[in-house]
Length: 405
Ligand code: TGC
Ligand code: FAD
Image: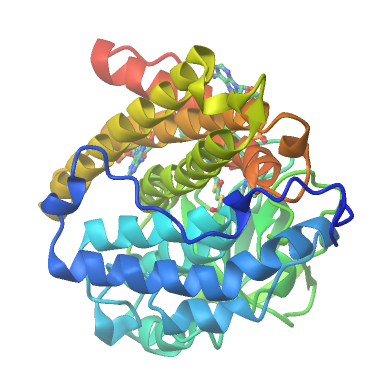
């Protein structure tokens, strides 16, 4: 829905023009041909499939579910997982750059890919049995199955170790009880990777399938953020699940936290995409919008904002590039990933807020992507570990003292 009539529109081309590439420190030179090809393919797909529809889906608070198949086709699900297990067989930088391009379109679209690849396929690939991998991964990689990841509970968000979702054994099955909250994709998911405490109190991953008796996934309504992404609960009332659905190769909180490391890495890249889209829009708008007889980009205060935006974007780009090179060598630590996730989200939210101001009144409308990105980024700053939790992870890493306990 257009907010404004043709007469009241400012007719500034910022919204529809071709996207301009912002690579202030020539980071492209650090990327391989494969990285650039992956980036350009995803960027083109986003321009064609996401940008034309995203404002309308966000406004309706509806998930564009038809995009799951397209995301699979462009290799957005598990780009750095092996091809034989439904992934893209690329490296970690390719994975990151794909997330950046998706989030340039919308954080909710990037979330669809993050959850499927890093939080559903990855734990099955890393901790699953060969039978589980064969059964689920090809269907998840091709988009035939949608998955979700259940860690957070109504009373345990930042502190997942306190979870109360649990199971007891019953012959060849387990009986699962409990509830998960804020679960991306849960109402439309075919399977859920659920983290629950077993009889010995150890946390295990369990694959729960849609249709199992006693399992429901009601949608959560009323979100002002990530509106094009569907979010729900997972409710388990004496759900009988075969023991064969337990991920055999991990026990304890390090299971879900390892998946989070993978997904947080992608978000560190992704949020930069949202920042780039806001910066791009602000740069165009301020060069064309005239007040006091000249483009507002000609005023020193506007230039300060633009200069600080591109400086912070560039610093974040260099941080994630370095993180990606470490990840490719298997050397990126969880604490380094936390630092990058926190930095990118905070930076992107600040860029979005500045860009909103620079568009004046137009900045609050759906004529420009700014408010949508800004509202989305409030979630991105919070999920996968809040801004403050990641700060405390860095604090613990540099001091050796655990502030959580
Ligand atoms: P703690 O005692 O520190 O650690 C328990 C075990 O886990 C290991 N570990 C990790 N392993 C891999 N990757 C990581 N990032 C890890 N962090 C810790 C750790 O070494 C230990 O191993 P072991 O062998 O000694 O048992 O655990 P804690 O209970 O003190 O908690 C620490 C804390 C607070 C940092 C952690 O729980 C945390 O990160 N909290 C934030 C929760 C969170 O991020 N939730 C996200 C839910 S999923 C989501 O938001 C998806 S959004 C999806 C979308 O994109 O739409
Ligand atoms: P709380 O943990 O209650 O935190 C509230 C505030 O207290 C925060 O500011 C926090 O930083 C602060 N705080 C908490 N502990 C401390 C401390 N020790 N020191 C200082 N401050 C502290 N979860 C999943 O499992 N799967 C999903 O797919 C998923 N998708 C999501 C989608 C959306 C749209 C949203 C909003 C959330 C999603 N989450 C998901 C949940 C998300 O990970 C949690 O919201 C997040 O981890 C924070 O938990 P909480 O909301 O319970 O906040």
